[in-house]
Length: 538
Image 1 (cartoon, one colour):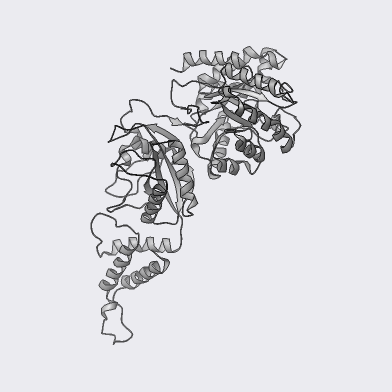
Image 2: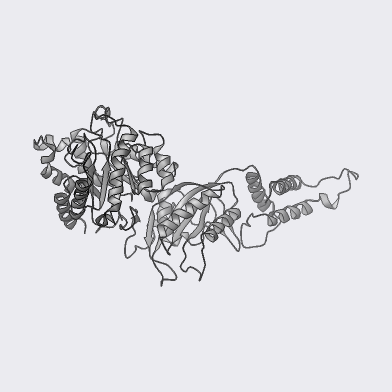
């Protein structure tokens, strides 16, 4: 509906709501046909029907003051371009399902009328109703839009059409499915749209992602709708035969991380520092010839690594900070070499950097993951760069910088609460910058702005941290390899000799729920992880 039409409708309502209007051309006792409330209300209904505004039920629009007020309030809001909050379900079970959902989110924003504020995790589920089809990937997003519900429906269907959706049968296979679940507190029903979504309360694959976004919210107050928070409705659903788990994609050729899957394997991230000054292996891979570096990479892969984490800047306390140019000069040759190795075809390449420029150039060169020890705090451009690149990201908890972090270890409410709250803040900041929740990995930051006892408490109580409200379902990376607190406890001064202490710490991390362990000694820690998985991942 055009702004002119909206304002005409608004003017008509104001005239009709004040009762009979006198025509300036007639005496005060004469009422013109165009001035009667009935005429003006009917005229308003005509304008509403011409617009994309919904009826509040399946019944034909009726000339009631309540319905007219409802529509005019909405007309007035749209005319003023007020931003409205809505929640949209995302689904796909054809092709690269995650890529389809990510493309749909981009297409929604490209058109200029929708801003994706937050996304849920993505969940893989069996099909309902028509069960003879492939598994679905489902999620939800919170959006902001000036569009009315029907205009929003048109916009979403335009996105589906642009992406080539072909509806073969109702509730059948589709490459993309976008449904409006909630729109402000609007309750409506017509032949094209019902709000709230008609079947949302019976579908776990809808409620679970929605409850990641607004678990305590209820449906709009209406006598026809059930009361209670969305989380309560989710809890009342029958238990699934196979519990749902969120998915976190890492790289093509790699299985997704499934953080809620109890039998999942722990991923081994091998550390490949190409620095002259890292705390335990500085210089080992710095300025090495291509053949030597290739043999090192192959040995990590054959020992069981599935992720290679390349670092071109040391983050040990007091380390000198290299320039972005120097960091790239160290990292990019390693990335290019890995991409050329047949043995590394299915490896995920991670870049350990806190610089947006380094991250962007590395992803363009073929890396898959940005592993930022500062979670975006050391470079103001990092989070927006992550959002734009659309890759997997690891957000680690740290305070200050490598130079100052050892003085920032006060956690008045306890280290679990402090780390959980501060990581949640970084997750929210990343989401606001366009990072999708299904692309986020977390790291508690062992050894970064933590005392020895705090490091031990994080390992001891990691199972509590992974369940911190707002962080549930996100995968966790834990890096304890050869760190100083292990040396202090075991009395081993030489970092390279801290293998046994590292093994114990990794076992604790896996028991606590870690999905990825970052290690120097790949073969040894690979064996440790297999044994820990056999004990705990059942």
